[in-house]
Image 1: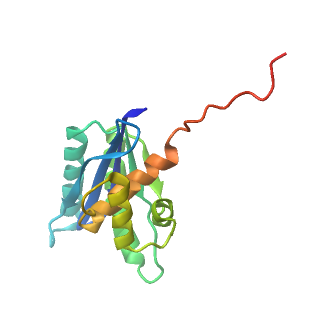
Image 2: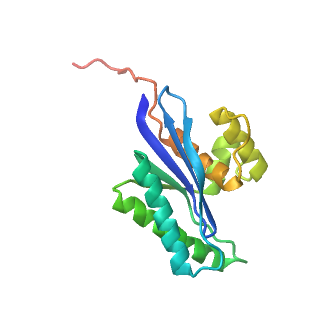
Image 3: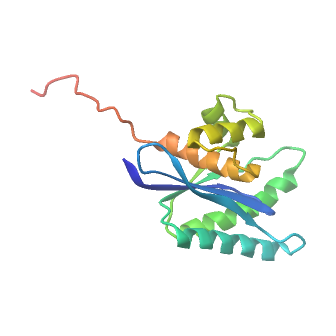
Length: 174
């Protein structure tokens, strides 16, 4: 049973970082908490990164997280600056996890989308719908940053869930 397993999914950003926490006390993943860490627009990069760090610390100190899943950094050749800025946010999140002694696992957005929808290029609305169905929510998570964070947590949960099947030996020991 995954009762002790509490996964924090993170969708990093410098304006908004989505987070979603899932656990599986009855075997199937359930939402524990979800929301966003908002950084103040117009503040310096250092101040926004400090706000992100403090927001993560609030989450980690209020719940017993066992592992963290985060979206992998990707770069579109037309927007390399965006990847560099996201690298700053991911660095703060990785440092916060390391300071808390928590393992961090990265997943490509295409893998997350494929695992939850069967389509590695699924649009945001389809992802929100898939997360709603997986977690039995009445409404899709909003804003999309929250849905993305929950999707990342679900992806990690499913990708690392121990097999329920017990393998039987094929040969007898002599």
